[in-house]
Image (cartoon, rainbow, N blue to C red; front, side, top):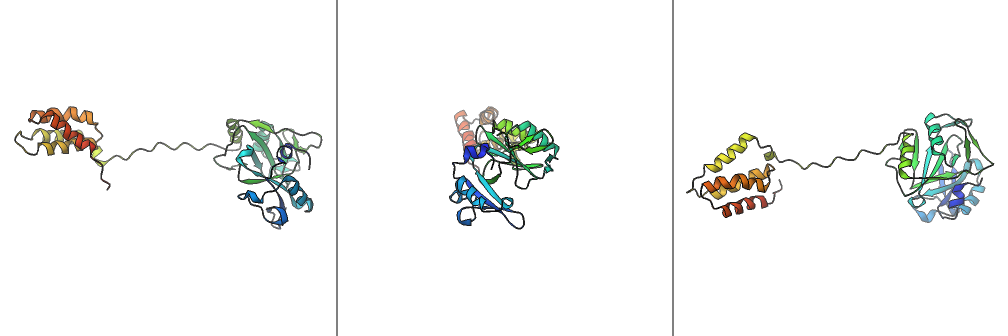
Length: 279
């Protein structure tokens, strides 16, 4: 394998496995002893040297090594699949992205795709990994590492044996802007939930006038003055009227009917302190 910034930076970590190509063309992650490796089980990951040693015993056309992406690595890998034909990058979106990214890029084992590697300045997970013209991963994914780093002139991607290209470090906001070239977008924030409006909150002016008229009609000698005031205050509360505004409207009406102000305020406060009963 050609020297590259991925193996140079991360070969010392036990975050590797080998892979084998199945008859149906799938890459199966393999750990020591030929057992299956799992991205969800770090105990199945091995050192790069072990993975590479295992891969040597497999036909180079049917095996290699993989790195397990985790948030701690702060890596963003963009998988551009089926964009190469005789070393020519056929996708306009892929060409634009590679030129804008200006980072370590290598040809995938199929020789039909590219992996574009970027280092992030902080851990980040894309809101969606499957893009219209690519896939983007930062964690919970095995990524093949071939070392077939490319030199790209805007149209052709040629494996370069002469130089080692650097892994570019960028901010998360720049990563989002780059991925936007491939169709990535952040989801719209959910609108703030609006509390349900009780049916009684749809109080019309006519209904409000009716409530106040009913309250004003209570005679001084009526034993229902407090009950009527409580009922009226409750209706205003349900309609969204504040306690202070309700007091300003209701107290003068009941005071004219002889109800003491302190008693009126207590009744209104009682209506506004009443807990809602679940339907």
